Length: 403
Image 1: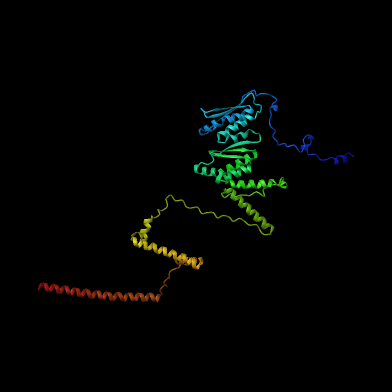
Image 2: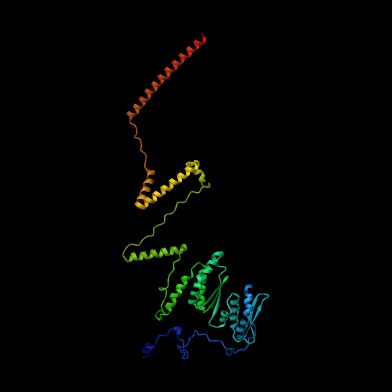
């Protein structure tokens, strides 16, 4: 009987073994709801210590802050926060008083004066005092070194006529202000995270349109209750990086090879072996520098172009232009194939072997030798006859002189 009872008992997870039912915790309760902090919630009474925060502001904000400081005081007074504007040192400070009941409101007041210093209007900055709105000041000045590149990428966040900034604000439910070297953001925590990602990626040369497109798809998918428990990866766009690291390229190549081998294995074919890379031959080291390349003038001297006159140079250039125009006309009329064939034939001319003279036979050699011998004898006889006639003439002249 005990065995049957043990079999009928449900198996309880050991992590949930000691959990008890909570009849007061029903499904209609929103656990993420933030209740407003009222004076009655502060049971301990006034704070024992004073907390204060101060922040500097630029010179150009002084005039505006003087005009709206009364509005700042009125906004902080109901929460029991005192504020001071120091025009000598250029700072704003907030501090708790005996009337302060919310321990976290001093941090909200600190964020408010920070936003005022960064150029946010008073009407927008006052909204930070509500519990459901947070702020984030993103520093972008030290991400890009080149000033021109920094300005272009910062302008990319705003977009043409502020269209990109407006799209970001609508999709993230945040207020975004681009000012100097910072981007001030106000809104819910989830939206702040998305805006920070968009801004930092934009400064790293990733265009905001990619993130905006992703957010638009996510917003449409959130409307479908059936996809609440499913992964959205198959719906989101996958943007390929243009400039990959060597390790990333190798990993992608290996993945493709593995997929190919799996497909071939399924088809019953042998796997593809990756071709071994041929090792490049190492160049022989020489301590001497490479030979100096000829100058343009040297090349002109070699070709003879340097000595041409002005009208001759012009004629040569005109011939080159005509030849080029003729080639273009040929290409248009007869197509690229004939032009390619003509070029190939022209290049092949350099590799045509010259005509070789056949070796002389023994009889031809003897005949040539015999002909050369006869020519030498004839020439020798002619030279001997000329010498004799010269000697006779000399003797005759000498006899005439004596007489």
